[in-house]
Image (spheres, rainbow, N blue to C red):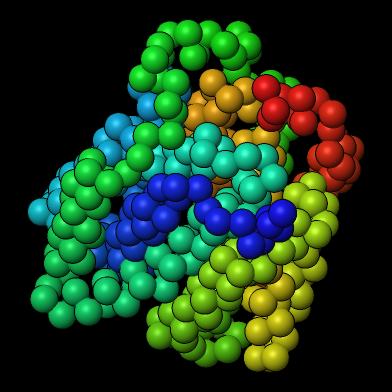
Length: 400
């Protein structure tokens, strides 16, 4: 009998993985250059923040709707729709001649940004419960790949002009959508038999109290992590004297380490310790890492903090996705994943402005100390709600 780490992946998984990885490559192309691009249209710092918030706000509204749609019509068509929407949003941003059109492009991109959550639902469809943590970790590694390859492509594309990276991201998304139409398998096989019956098998309350608890914890940890994402460049400049290139190298290292954690280590760790225990350990590591980062004044301490932060996030993220997949009713899995994604979107809307204000007015160290405090609250919630130990209810639902 093969172990969870040596068992072959389900048929179609690598096609799904490639689809997600290419989507995140396009995301990685755009995000690092968006602020500078927006300044060409006269955007202030506040406006740039609103530009990022517009993406997350659109995702907050649309992710649960697209997840629910994937429960009704299947995962494949919704992923294809999401990729086409991403392509359209990127092309609009590239062609934008005014700031309001740039907002339209980002809103289009955010509204269609459900490919990852629907792909996670697809993994829940195709894999038995014992295999889901490993596959969720592999799927999460696609995020690291996107942030390693995407910025490199974006940097090269800027040599052709400021609009070219957006056109490159749109072309990748369009080619990805066309390839998905041909190669991506449909994992909701019961959709082909009777979509209405498939949805009715689930309970009337698709979002159970346990899923609301996971969404609340996901919101808190995302709110904390965005403090690092949004202010790290400022921390590096003020304390360590590096500019955009120095920050880029740090994020490159974070991306590579994330690929190793989620693509290589996570499946083995989940098989040995269990998803629930790993989730608690991951969130606890975030407390230590963010506290260390708030105190970092020399390179060795900063490197340790970044390594611990990536390890904590790399373990916590696939763990919470696996837990949602286990708890969600099979016929409502897409809706549950979309609901979880929406909770992350709220964290990304609220987090950066708060972290930026704290950095400017309360001290360089305060966004990280505050984020550590938020993660400590998340640890308390994990223990209080019993998320750190397997529940009979979860096993019952996941095996239904």
